Length: 101
Image (tube, rainbow, N blue to C red; front, side):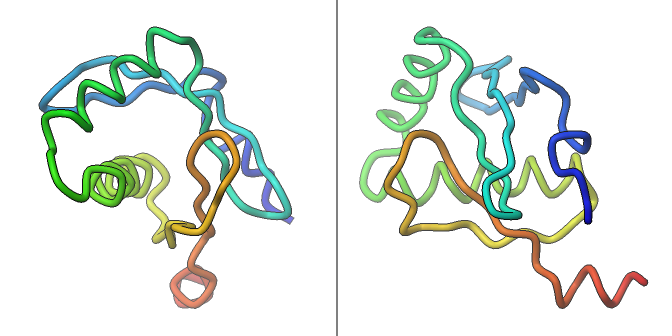
């Protein structure tokens, strides 16, 4: 089984056009990647990004974050738009992963 946490460093950070160095604490939940903003400062940066995105900001931010994680991991992901807990959850696209094997 892939150790998802080992794929992402503790407090991994991503840069966005609207804000830089947004840090997340990665975790794995039932084989999914869960990214939780590391500090309240990072939550504020995310809120500022969403304010600049306007309508549909939650979906757009999730898409922006997905692109950055995929680039970092080299894996295709599926964003869990129904995730209701803290942070942002992603599933590894197993079809794409098996194509690489």
